[in-house]
Image 1: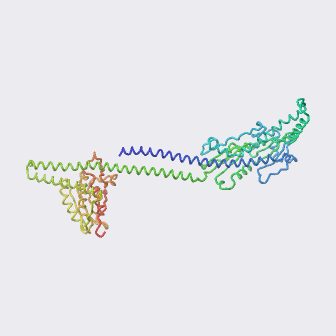
Image 2: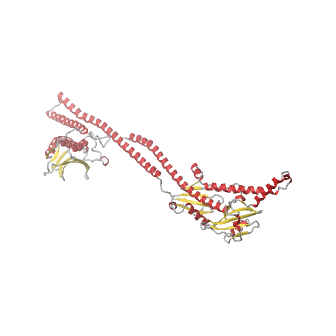
Image 3: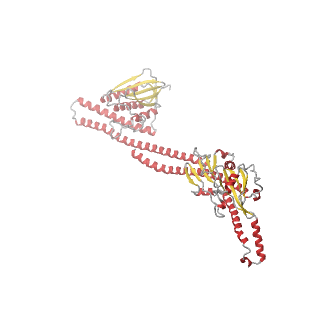
Length: 584
């Protein structure tokens, strides 16, 4: 059995390890899908915020230049849907600031050049070049990774069409601004000698076109940055009438964040799972997740590059595929484990039964050889006339008879068990008293018990009703139980076998007990199995084949009786046979 267990462990490992790897890979795929799903939601939300900022920027870039120059207090009022706009301002070429009281500090700082935006637009970068936003940092389960670290993330980042459209629009404005600036020197140099070589009408037409071009306002793309924790400035540079103007607006970052949150999340079902915070820190420290969710940080594209957002997504409801994978994985592991245990149990039972059958063959050979040897020895002594007295001859005859009976009982046990195992043994049940059967069994067993040094005490209640039994089967059961008691109580101080019959309820209980050591608790549930012996075959001290109690149970079941074996508190072992009464 030890070798079987080792082999089974190797087979189980060979089966369970690939299954475990398969389940682990499936669960990992589910987790990757889960993270990708949350990342997709986050990208969609950030993209919606970028789209809203692009719409805001497009409206401001389309605002006429003249709208800023109507007086010292700029008669522009925030729209009802733009509560985040504090006000507008304009700085003329002489440095004069036209702004309201709430926007004047930011405009004055810009006019004095004491504040320069982080996102400088054309003032701090080459014309036509747009500073790309920093790649958003994703913190998943405490692990921070740059977006774009995998092809999936790159694909998600490509969804941000608003940023691309904004960049294209700003580049168009920048190209127009640069082209107009480069055209100015060319217009001023038309009277040079080199130009004199051209025909006068063509030169005059070209000069008129350039002058008209310089007369129109030249607008640069918006630049921007935060002035402090609460205010963000957007402004543009305008070339008009030979001078450089700066026009822009001041935004409240708190209200801007609330507006972006409403535009992206609103009050729908997603609002239950998404929380977002805005700020100029990197990233906003005001929002942390403590519930096992997903945290995403995002820096907006120019000219809002100083504005960052942190989004926390609580785990979204599981999709069907994930639930199925978890359920199927658990079912697969349970089925494989149960199957392996069932296989091991089945193989262990078959191997154990085969081992016990092999031990049974060895035991039967030994049990057959012992009485045959004794019979042959006593028979040869009697044949050769070497027995000196009549008393000795009588003793030898008794030995031959006893060993022959023992041999007959052994053979009968084997034959009876074979018929029971094949299901070919008929049951000839009768109804009658069991007292005569007990007396007959005691008479036949007494010489054997006396030879072994045992006594038998029989107790039969007087008012026992008739029982339903088979005489030969009951005799054989009593022979086996008494013989079993003699074998296992051979070393006991009390060498008495008790045979008792009494009525218990609607049954007659026939009990055989000894005063031996009893049966170890570990073997108590297996003593009625065929060929089972609690001792190892090579080291056992008691005789027997392992068929006695198995045959008792088989014959009892054939008669409709019950069998129970138990250890007694005052020592010894007892087997009870419950026979049905005639009324039952």
